[in-house]
Image (cartoon, rainbow over all chains, first blue to last red):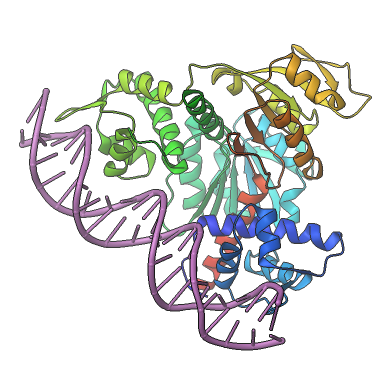
Amino acid sequence: MSRKISESSIRRLSIYLRILEEERRAGTTTVSSEDLAERAGTTAAQVRKDLSHFGSFGKRGLGYAVDELEGELRDIMGLGDRWRVALIGAGRIGSALLEYTGFAERGFDIVAVLDNDPGRVGEAWGQVTIRDARCIEDVVRREAVEVAIVAVPAAAAQEVVDRVVRAGVRGILNFAPVQLRVPEGVALKHVNLVMELEALSFALSQDNGHS
Amino acid sequence: MSRKISESSIRRLSIYLRILEEERRAGTTTVSSEDLAERAGTTAAQVRKDLSHFGSFGKRGLGYAVDELEGELRDIMGLGDRWRVALIGAGRIGSALLEYTGFAERGFDIVAVLDNDPGRVGEAWGQVTIRDARCIEDVVRREAVEVAIVAVPAAAAQEVVDRVVRAGVRGILNFAPVQLRVPEGVALKHVNLVMELEALSFALSQDNGHS
DNA sequence: AGGTGTGAACACTTTCACAGCA
DNA sequence: TGCTGTGAAAGTGTTCACACCT
């Protein structure tokens, strides 16, 4: 139950949760740390350590009750909470994201969409209407937006972030292939295909040297 | 010039490369580790350490020549090499990826697209024609595919991976929200929106407790 | 016996601090 | 002087190994 949990530990919790959902659907009632580790691609000790940061959920000699642990993890990850989200950038990535149901499933409700193309402002998009990106601050405040999804070109991303943060946003999910700076207290996560591609390229070209 | 380079170090190299491209376009000729660190959101010592794993590219008292360092990084990351890629899954994610120009820019040439929907097999898609996913092994061998992009539902992902790996694929870019197992020697990278969303949810709900 | 929870050992990463070159 | 390259120190994250509970 300590204070500072590592990023890698949290990502593993997400993996465990996915496995528990699947096990529950398959009718499994208990799992051991060994089972979870096997399926998550880690070690049993790691699983136990990850969980122990938040409490004692297992039964010695038995393992973890699938239902119960799933509920605990949902709770730990804050998946019961709901967040008001603005999607910024209605281009290719933006449109793909708007159709994605995974946001709402995890508590992220898209309440506004913004774009800087005057030709698109006013266009109806799903439940919402595209608004002018010049009014970011206004929209964020009026709609009580807490989270911004940044799906704009790399060159525009930092400015967008500065503006939404000033307007009160506390979490950002960034799809632009740049490193963003945010003040202390603002949560920032990246989905960066370019970085993964380059890491893959590196790994592949390394192997070559080995053979 | 050691052997084992950490994943985080490689991801930072990718960030440095992006910054160097931008600086070059802006006409900058030299940068210091301090400059790079500032823009990359890390420390000067970290930048120097990352680079020192691969050689000595800087000039003491001056910094790094932008052009030269950019070239070195491209080389280190293997961005001069080209890889033959099969895109597996022609659904929503698959179609978005096929239109993405970033693959070719980084040496990944999509030479085949596969799907398991019989109704879509034969459909022309960009330069290639959708082929039947039942023939994965065949296509991989015939087209000398080295890398697979997995854009299929979570439940199907592991089987697809097992099959392409058996057919000789050496690198995988996975978009399915599951943890995949691959044998030693096969490079595996993930783009996992679900995990980032849940990590964001966790971070946001933690902050709440603090206030 | 079987499997969790956890301090202690270990491994890895980051930061410090400075020698040494331009 | 200015800034790199790098050992050594500090800090984090992972693995081990075992006490303890059912």
